[in-house]
Image (cartoon, rainbow, N blue to C red):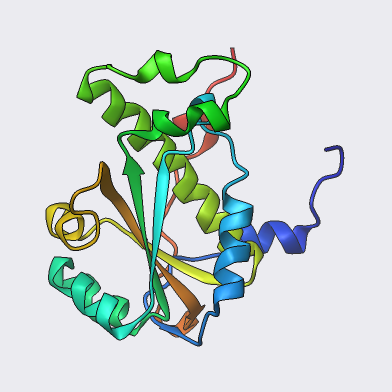
Length: 196
């Protein structure tokens, strides 16, 4: 990778991209597959790929999700064409013989304390959430990530009987720019970073 992306691409991914609160449009299955196929390529620890994605689109699925949402996130989530539940699989290591075949990476995690598995899985799924947001923006979709929901209710509705736990929700669609808030400040380089 030697070429810098053009300013228009950097704008779409970062500078002018916003967290949206109102959505319209439709998102078909092919677009959701393209979205996942881009997001899955980002790196994770030992290529563990612990994120699990539920694309909530049907009325029935939205009704299952609704009771878990905070009051401020309910209406926009019900109206969004798709809401992605990003979860993390606490048994991510079961896939490592396929995902990391050149070493016995499964043995690095199997039998570990739950706190360690939670830390690795949550960290990896959070990274994959960021990849999903950037992939959505690259495909021309707007996003509205949020953590204002009851994890236990989401887990009961969508992950009962599995080792998957919810992490973040992301609304997807065509955002209404008039419903965004002014961009909030960010820390300067000197406030958040240093070069040693």
